[in-house]
Amino acid sequence: MYIAMMGAAGLRKATQVALLSATTLPGGWCHTIDLYAGRNGFVAHECILDLRPLKDASGISAEESPSD
Image (cartoon, rainbow, N blue to C red):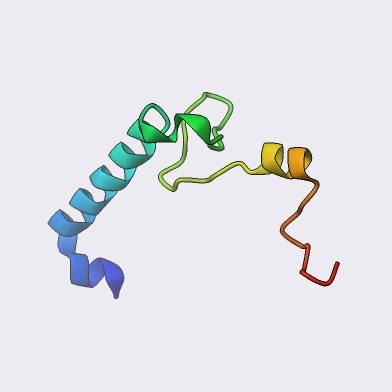
């Protein structure tokens, strides 16, 4: 339904914006946050934050709960 509602032009524009955002984000304000990049150094069309350094430094994982 999403593709049908967006139409060819809308889908193309959404893809261009997503790719542009994902490629420019690491060099912009996000230089202090690690982003997941593939073997070629490019990020995906999503912004995937790599929080492993934060986990290693703090000892807190996503599975932690307030009662732990």
